[in-house]
Length: 282
Ligand code: ADP
Ligand code: MG
Image (tube, rainbow, N blue to C red):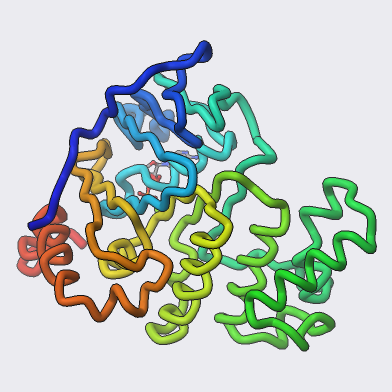
């Protein structure tokens, strides 16, 4: 009922070695960190290969500490792999890349800038002219239901509104690849559903390629084309699940689909959730 497919795609390679058609690709990526005080190195992610096509949304789930954030940091060029390679738009990642935007659980809005000025931040840094960046910020704020809050400051907004502003800021720079690290995990369950809807509609309309980390199994299933499951540290991808429920652009519809239960059940099995009930290891 729940389909899986081979993890490493058999496809042609271009000159740099990237898979043709992949917006972002990890090839045999391992990342180690030096152990503290002479301890053995920590292997955060081990031999990870994944490839995301243009416009695809892929979620990554796995136990805490398995290396999910480390993978995203390598996608954005903040960390380099110890072994293997990461490609964005066919080019090997060797440092921060303006085509990639990152969104985190913390909104990281600057408290001294208005919401509009926060949304404009990346455009300002890139030297866009004031009028143009203002127009783009206002259009995005409208899309994310922030109209009327342009001159407010972050402390005047709810957590959900601040994350909406963070989404607008992330999209303002027109990245081709979005990396999202548990962006909604600090929100209450209902606010989260609303923001998932905002995000899913935008990703579908703008055909953004997205790698999305979450611990929320239903969130992973409702937002994604595929869900990749990682093992505990040293984290590697143990399963790829293709979500064959229509309506990726409308998670409220997917959430109500009776097929969701089979996907949740499969993910619970892969993550050994039942075993954790009687364990002290969480
Ligand atoms: P996840 O996001 O899946 O919870 P992380 O990628 O944050 O996991 O971390 C994976 C492992 O790598 C953890 O053991 C963490 O302590 C370690 N780690 C992550 N970043 C660093 C770093 N900059 N220096 C040392 N160890 C790190
Ligand atoms: Mg993390």
